[in-house]
Image 1 (cartoon, rainbow, N blue to C red):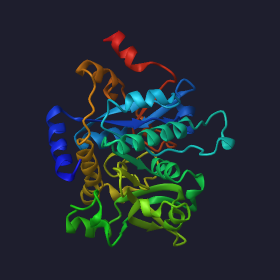
Image 2: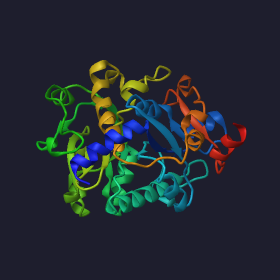
Image 3: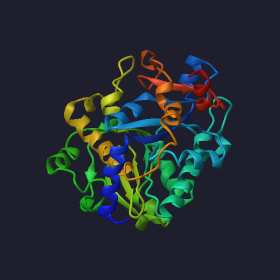
Image 4: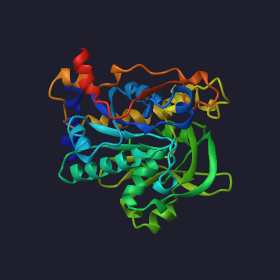
Length: 334
């Protein structure tokens, strides 16, 4: 479809109801496992749910550790996917009993299926955030070595926008004053120990496929990519956590991104979600019925108040058991 047809599809999508965005679960964090027990296998930070809802979408949790057919079925129902952040080992050799990495293979399935869909002409957006950003580019490069070590980053920073950022889908309509503020105020919450550099994109043969929109630098002045989009497909990535500006105001521990919890920073972060959701509305997927959709929505669960613990990095989290047919459970109990 051309641009005009895609815009018309977005309007039609909005008329049919809220876009359903799949958010991939992440293998249970060590801190959550210690606090809540071995019953739980995966989680979603509630900030991602609030962030998507703030842009007019609703969230469908995507389970990890399933076969490829599960992701294929799910991606026929939803309008886009968010690959969130988290702390897992990328290499299987580093795994241990209390920390798995099922989300790594799941993200690979989602990436492959999204490529197939877009090649066939189905507009299907993906957004990778932090770990999800790295997994997106690891799959694009077909190599874990596309990322490298950098100085640990636990702070909110301004961005350095690329000169041609307006030639992108994501930022082409970014207001001038907002673009100026993005490069001045510390709105982008970074929490990571690995980076992806422009040199590494080139070294792995994918530099021309991706449009680097913004960079940051670590404490040793290593420049790394922090905002990116694919030049052909609606694939987007942010090394920083835009959802944290409004929705992760920690109080039981030091909040290293406290400077981002103000209106001007929240507006910058929310802008990215607003555009992403508008793009997801171009996708025409729907559940077969409202009843089927209801059984899959995140609203079937209640988040835990995890922010009361000093070792928690999230105010609220949704916790999930392993291998339970949740939609079926919702159908039986409704």
